[in-house]
Length: 211
Image (cartoon, rainbow, N blue to C red; front, side, top):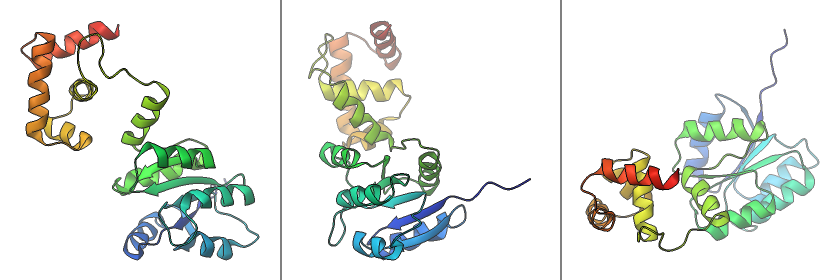
C-alpha cells in the first residue's frame, strides 16, 4: 500500500531563532522545502513552482508585508494554503489577512504542537485559528452590546465566559491581559449585579439565560 505523501511546508519568518525552532520541529512531521526571511526571498526561491502545500507567513517582515505576501502567493498558487503566524491579534490585522486570502491565523506564542495541527488542518482545507483570534472573529460577526440585560459590562461578560469554560482566575486574567486582582474585582461586581454569592450560581444564571 502506498504511503500518503507528506505535506510540504514553506516558512516566511525574519526572526532567525524562531525560524530555526519552527524548521527543526516541523521537519519531523512535514517537508519544510522553502524557508525564507522575507516575501521577496520566498517568491524568488520558489520561482515558477511547485509551491508548498502550506505556507506559514509572518506579518511584520522586511520589505513586503506578510499580508501582501498572502495575496502574492495565492495569485501564483491558488491551491496553496497560507496560515499567518504572528504576534498581532488585533481585528484589523486578522481581517486584512483573511481578506487577502489567508486560510488561518495563529499566534506565535502557540505551542509547537498547535502549530503542527494548524498545518495539518490547513492541508486538509480547514481554517486553523488561535482561540483568542477565533473569539475576535466571532465578536466581529456577532457583536454584543456593551451591556446585556443582566447589566454586566462587556468585560464582565468575558469574565463570566471564562468561568463557564472552567478557567482559573489566572487563566482568565491571562486571556484578558488583566491581573488576578482585577479578575477578582470584576467577579465581585458580577456577584453584586446578578445577586449571587458563588461561581455555581453565576453559571446557573448563565445557562438559564442561554437556553
